[in-house]
Length: 593
Image (cartoon, rainbow, N blue to C red; front, side, top):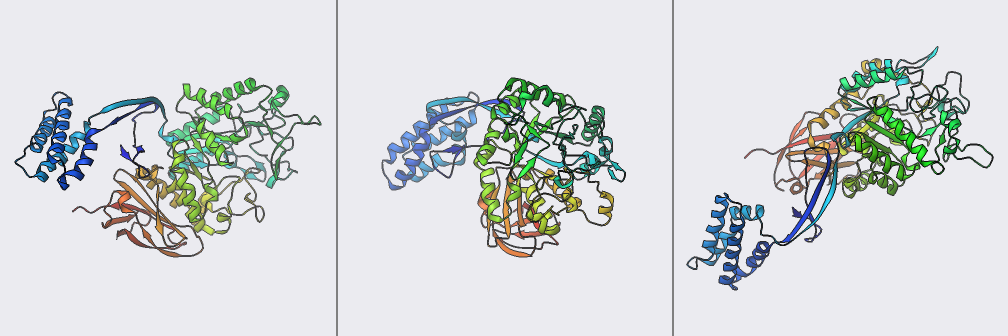
């Protein structure tokens, strides 16, 4: 354990465990008379102050430490005895006597076997260790109903047809396939194309308007297939090394069975109607939010039943829609109950809300959280935001950086052309251990429904969006090869699977950001454009001591994106071009001497 840079009174250490589950740790503290003696002797002996007394006391401490060594530790005991003997030999020069106490061998023995006075213990403290996927993973979101869909005549895609899309997703290196709700969709106040209130006869409606006479949250939309088809989809993903995340949207369409069977689960307005969902200026007339005050136990029991139903069909990850609009006690209770029997089940909070609420959701049990990454696009915005995420917040909140979602098409992507897509996926994949893209990102889909909006034109939330993946690949209109390369680099480098080692480094150009990650001997340096329109140059000043390197050391920089290799030093010149290479992702190798 080492003192932090903030204060000698504050200490920190890193602890690694080798298996998931509930662990405990206890903090033991003590005074260390040997360290105190060393500090004092370093001052007094060179000045010739009380030399014999100080060296005799140091020798006495070494003899005390030797007596406390475990039986059989003869070599260490001999090291301390020899040092004590030399320290009390008045025939030797004072500095020689003192140097016997400061050899590397003595330091090693006294560090691993310290003298402990006034020892106290604090704990045990609980430490919940979750499976690796709670921290590290690459997510791909897509709508199964668009795979194999057709416009004329109107036809929905199916889960069986969507299975054919899975190999391409796996080939890109994704770990998690995230599906929006696959349940029956209501017809009352159904939304048409581009969120229109006048749907056409073939418009499928929003998957988040859950529930119809065909069933509710434990049913599959008839157009998609059956529960058996869902099981086949999950199995096909598993065979390709991926797992399925399912949307958990706790709301209902006006046609959901809950509305008729449990009207007390909803807010009744003064005119007797049920309140629909709103996020002003957005209105969701096709969705009724749940109201927990009148029957909290009944609602809770149904929610846990639904979650366990999908768990029984192979779902081990749930992406929870708008959890901040539900009471915190619900998540505290639900996640604890699920993880008590199935600790491998993970919950991702889709909560774009005030930061204290996002952090509160993490504290009550959510294993992952959406973030504000989508809206952090300048160099300083990224540095300020990530400094918190990788610093204090990392103790309880694990970020998932989505480049885009069906709801969010940031203006950076709307107006930045293909380089903007390359920049954002590079940053997402290298800054955060977990990141994701929504289908269509790799095809550079960037047109908004209107100026100033973050909604997609012809949003897939309200219509089928079949895509010709093969044609895009033949014409070179796809970012898939670059995404594949990034995911491969992430898997090969433990540093990119880490959050807390993130460190930013100085550049003299605000259009290029520089940062590093380090795990053990794996050091990765990243320089990336944040301007998709122009080429830029900068000098980068790498803080080499913080990476365990000599500040004057030159090292081999191997670009994992381009394959180029350079010799870099603490000050490096970088030139990046939007249409050629938006970033350097560099592996550091120190030449052997």
